[in-house]
Length: 61
Image (cartoon, rainbow, N blue to C red; front, top):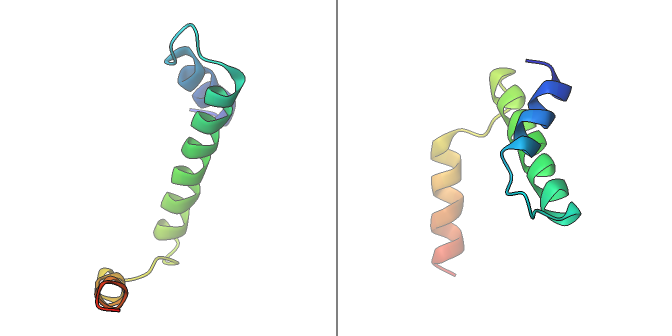
């Protein structure tokens, strides 16, 4: 599916009374998720163990 097709499908799934802000937020969210997925597929992600370590550090401060 092309980006344009995905955007159209996303917008069509919104409520009829969605305003421009909702449209913008939904498109930005989908774009961020897809960017993250591509980064993970490229091996650019952070290992789960590192995230767990960081969370523990944040919650024990």
